[in-house]
Image 1 (cartoon, rainbow, N blue to C red):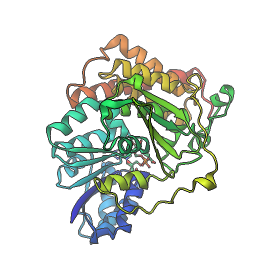
Image 2: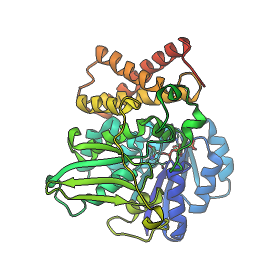
Image 3: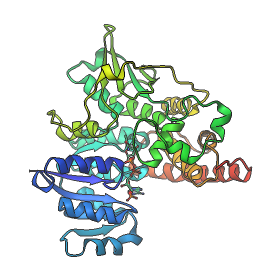
Image 4: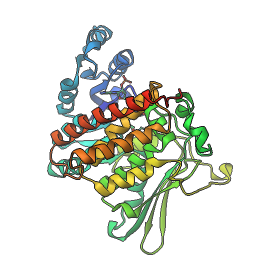
Length: 398
Ligand code: NDP
């Protein structure tokens, strides 16, 4: 029986993974080693009981008593804190879902790779912050990373059986989010509730807002570069409001392979779960005749500066990805708390990169995990200062 662990089990990716495992028979089909969460310990305990997990870990140490109480009599171990999360990643499991949101997903993922595990990587922040290190760690320990982001799973599937040397371009699609048609003046006043309302996908709040600002696509550009190794000029973004075509790969003979599927993350998660086989996945089947038409348009970098910033970060490489991601996470925190406006998020990230490039060498290679964590910390501090300055400047709208 295969053993699995789910990091970020209580989130949107975690719930979809749980659903697939349960539909396959739950504990009768898979042995669950660890499930992890942060604030939602009630749901974490419920999942741990249903999957008969060895251990349940909350990232929040203050919630350990609640988790213990919720697990009483279940035989599931309870643990809490960053060290416990890392320890959970050391426990032997054949397949590990990396579904934590943000840079917090990096350390558990790295730990799992060091043990040669198969890591289903939803946590794109790991590749953005420490791509070269993550890929080198996987190679050194015979581990496998399978992309779970729908676009990257699509590229992976389009490349299967192909010669990577014959690839001319890779196109990842973006829905354009809820603000695709909004004029700039209205975008400046966009609220958190409006930004969270993704037209096609049901996802966690943070990635939903990142989709509205295109920061999610910006992270995915960098993710594509780091995971597949294609140079930035070969990677394009195409706005496709229906979210049916997830990515396209163009070859030197002019042929283009596209991957299509409904907007349901269980497809990409299930693909990674069953890989290298194709298992039965309970997602809605495409009905193109009913859909009638699919549309595509070029992204507008002026309205979505995140894409331009991602190109600058890809040109810098090194520790710039860690700085970019950390600044983005802090800008998002401030937007969600009502401190800064929607368009201020990109301004805070841009100002942070500018400030940091005067202070440190952003192009320094990603040598160790400690280098990445130090840059992450510094960028969070600077971004926090710059966001507060903007707030004090009275530019908040929410
Ligand atoms: P959610 O916000 O729905 O869930 C995040 C998960 O991480 C929860 O289990 C949460 O716990 C846990 N968590 C939050 N903060 C911490 C922390 N500091 N330390 C440890 N665990 C923490 O996110 P999503 O599921 O939407 O996204 C997860 C990852 O997958 C992200 O990297 C995202 O970019 C990526 N992704 C998501 C997609 C989607 O459809 N949702 C699509 C493609 C990629 P709790 O809820 O208990 O607080």
